[in-house]
Image 1 (cartoon, rainbow, N blue to C red):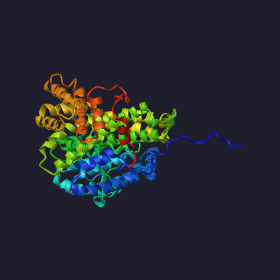
Image 2: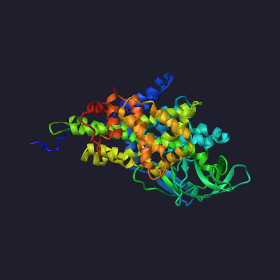
Image 3: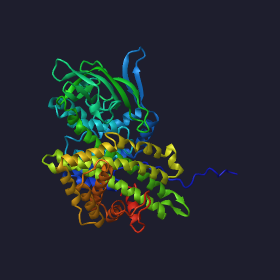
Image 4: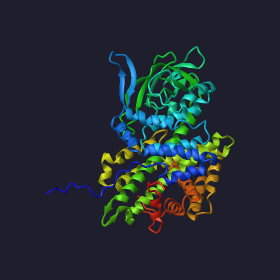
Length: 549
């Protein structure tokens, strides 16, 4: 008699072989909303191609392999020569090569580049998040380098290239190059003005030798790095190439690779400089001002990256419950599960909508003459970075729970999403740094607050809970006494009001209604799945279903 105890039934099929872009209604609608009409067809075509690759079995396997086989540091060769190389699994190169060829380092010089790139970043991060680190820093280095036109002319074509060329060679010999960044040190962390790395000028104009360390230097296999060091005139930004023009390797001593909670496919390192050659970027003493545009661009990627992780978490949860039966019916049809899924979907939609709005503002600034959009970004980016990245962890954790025990095992992919989820809240300035940045802008740049209020004011009168939240926010902003102690509360409210205003303008009525009722109106519990039961939850869940129309 045949054994039947191991017959597999009631298991959801893997979410594979689908178009990550077109299966995401929020993302496709956002791209259509913000794209110039003449660019929309081209943008859709490139994002569809990337979406199909991201959802393929091959790309998903690349993500698994890159994380199961993390990078390995080789400080010396077999003869004892110092080489400071990092070996990666071939899957990592496949992932990074696909990202570069898809234009994810090319935003600054092409029409609609920031929106197209942000949407692509959101798509490709769902295949594997670790390769987003060098992609993000390479993209973000461009505005910092433009402080020095000669450096920009030399490096920008390589950084925006769609050619991925791994390996340590002189950058002039490569059709494409990647950039990393080294700012934090052991004693200072986010307080980069406490850096002790020294920069000694050489006789040649703009050339220095650096001596010191960096506690966190991500993607050490890159071709160049922007770093901060103390020059005679104060904290200054420098370009450090891994390989010098004559083919010799710059002194870039990798002490160890970080053993991280997540992001394991990507190498993060500690590095020592010992008479390391560097080229000054910008003026002495203006290092923070020089590199701040790079930091702002990477912060936007933190928002998009977290939105991507949330979207993939929700997609997996909705997909699983669509096919999983329990207690006499499908899980997705159970009222309590539907409430959980709808709540998660709201968080995901609000994050994606905000990320695309920020990217569209970058495009407006890039096109010139958009002072209001530049001012808007000054407050909206740190506020969004603070809030969206913090929402990623609870979303990933709750979505994992929707899969039950199946979600707790590595094969489901959910543990990798959960381990990755805190990263964007920490990198490029943790929560307190973002809150303080918002407070600084409020106190010093009144035009930023005016632009922010004009943006949220475009939705006034459409929902009474949003109107009340805006009024309360104005009351908070009217009194800046003791502002630092309540900075997180204020920034959270700013982010929620901004998300609510965008959803009221652009999302389906049931989505906007649910968001305003829960996040702004207070009709919500302290865990996901506590939305008012009278809302249109079924349509919210259906909208989040990862199926292309």
